[in-house]
Length: 260
Ligand SMILES: *[C@@H]1O[C@H](CO)[C@@H](O)[C@H](O)[C@H]1NC(C)=O
Ligand SMILES: *[C@@H]1O[C@H](CO)[C@@H](O)[C@H](O)[C@H]1NC(C)=O
Ligand SMILES: *[C@@H]1O[C@H](CO)[C@@H](O)[C@H](O)[C@H]1NC(C)=O
Ligand SMILES: *[C@@H]1O[C@H](CO)[C@@H](O)[C@H](O)[C@H]1NC(C)=O
Image 1 (cartoon, helix red, strand yellow):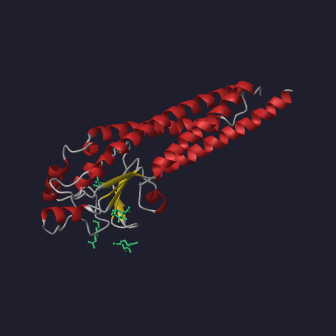
Image 2 (cartoon, protein in one colour; image 1 turned 120 degrees about the vertical axis):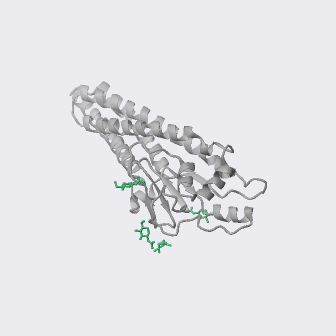
Image 3 (cartoon, rainbow, N blue to C red; image 1 turned 60 degrees about the horizontal axis):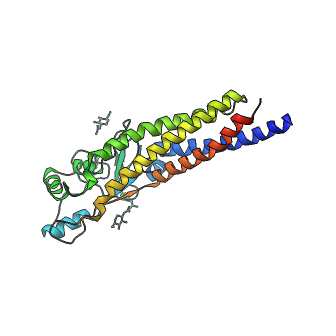
C-alpha cells in the first residue's frame, strides 16, 4: 500500500517537474527577447511596431516628398534622432529597430525597460518630424498613454519574481520529502499568480497601444501607417502560465500524498 503511494507520488512529481521545467525554459526565452540582434533574441518580442508606411502617409498628406525620416544606416544608434526604423520590436530589457528582416540595432539593456512605442518613435526623428508627429498623434488615442509604460514596468518585476519562484519550485521539487513538496507547491502557486498578472498587464498594454492602428491622418482618409501588434514573446509568456498552472495539480497531490 505504502509502496503504491510512493510510486504514485514519484509519477506525480515527475509530471510536476516536467511542467515547471517547460515553464522555466519558456520564461528564459521570454527574457532574452530583443537583448541583441542575433537570431534567437531577434525572433522573440513582446510587441512589434511597423512604421514602414508612415513616410508614405506623410508624403501623401502633405503633398511634399519626405526625406530623412527613415534611417539609412541599420546600425545607427537608437534614441539619437538618427532616423526611424521600419520595424521596432520590444523586449523585457531593451528594444531593437530594424531596417529589414535582419539588419538592425538595439538599445542598451536596462532592468525594467518600459514599453513606450510612441517615445521610441519620436526619439529617432529629427525635430521637425517629431513636432509634426506630435501634432498628428497627440491626444488621439491611448497609444501615447503613460500608463502603458507603468504597467509594463510593474509587469517586468512580476515576471522576474515569477520566474525565480518557478525555478525554486522545480529545484526544491526534486528533494523527496513531504515538506519539500509543500514548498514546491507554494512556489508553483506564487509563480503562477505572478506570471499570470505580468502577462495580463502586458496584454492590456499592447491592446492599448494597438489603438494607433486605426488612426487616420487629420482631415484625410489616409491610414496613419503605424501598426502595433503583439509578438511571439507574449505567446511564450502565456504558454508559461499554462505550464505553471498544469504543474499545480501534481505538485499539490504530491505534497498531500507523498510520505517519503
Ligand atoms: C510592415 O507593413 C508593411 C505594409 O503594411 C508590410 O508590407 C510589411 O511586410 C510589414 N513588415 C513586417 C516586418 O511585418
Ligand atoms: C553606421 O553607423 C555606425 C554606428 O554609428 C557607424 O559606425 C558606421 O560607420 C555607419 N555606417 C555608414 C555607412 O555610415
Ligand atoms: C538588410 O540590410 C542590410 C544592410 O542594409 C543588407 O546587407 C542585407 O542584405 C539586407 N537583408 C535583406 C534580407 O534584405
Ligand atoms: C549605451 O552604453 C554605452 C557604453 O556603456 C554608452 O556609451 C552609450 O551612450 C549608451 N547608449 C545609450 C543610448 O544610453
